[in-house]
Length: 241
Image (cartoon, rainbow, N blue to C red; front, side):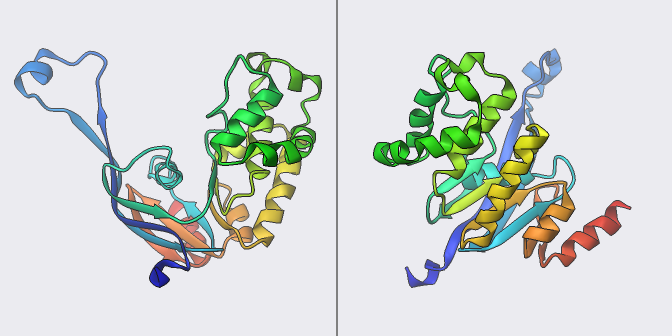
């Protein structure tokens, strides 16, 4: 156990392969060739992330960045390989996961909070902070199906950041809210970056990663092709220019 005591995440030989089903396969494809088209989203990833590290993950669209985060978060399973994590993981990838459309905002706080591993008493102690941060007014007492996408984002984000994670996983979607909430959420995340939390963030906003992360992974075609300091960002910029 001492060997892994400093680790937050460990991936060994992780691959993720999707089968692509065509809407209208030809007779040859279906009955004669018996071939299914495969898409390799991740290819034999080996990765260790230490507790407290702030890691930025960059790369072109479709390179496997979000798939990697989903596997670490446990949202999806690898086709091959092993994933081990230490500590409570909170993922801000699919903020609506765990919500029920017929329950009120307040009821969904309890439901989603417990799915994230919070105890009911802990949620009760923090519920006013969660409601105030989400800032959705009287909608907190109305069913979720009446919410706009922005309101769902606010509520999901507020629950996530008040769940006291050890590992926080961030994706581009967290910047999909309005400008006022974006400022509030960015300020909240700065608090996490100052703490000894393990943070993984995927973003095309390279300056954000440059400012907040000390380690950068460059992913392309499902493989980690560079793993180093923020200098990796400059190399990536040169490749894209």
